[in-house]
Image (cartoon, rainbow, N blue to C red; front, side, top):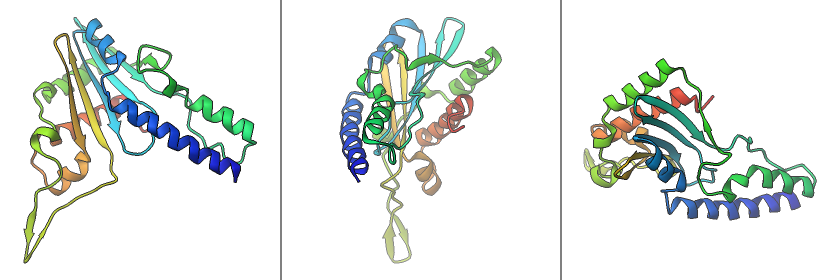
Length: 212
């Protein structure tokens, strides 16, 4: 029971920390890439639930294409069932990433891909013209109201995640935000930005093997 209470208190506290981090999405890591690369795309999945930071980077400097991750390699495991002191130590180790600003530190690492795959990754992304995309703030969120018989309905979801893409050049850091793009593209297709971010998401998932 004590372990359960400890876990609930800890998760509430760290969720508040994470939400505070997300209020300022441009972190030192983004500024470092701006200063040290010609152009960089940084992708992350967003959520209203607790999560530790996880970023996936595709960057180009001259003709050199590189890939990086910023994430916690310590697997999140429940401390329930362990003695209180051990549970506290496990939680502290798993959540150290929240004590650090998102920067070039131990959580920032190169991601190995063959040069041919990195080039194809870059070509596939740039074909979608990410720097010209408009996100939900411009194209609109959700689905429009639809007349079905005598009723007016809309498709809506409130517990889904989203996708965020940072477009970094020497001149600017542009952020695109999309909420539940797969769900809404399925139910009310046609918005170019939403369709493109779904394709971009799949490219990052595939190349970084995010769910494996």
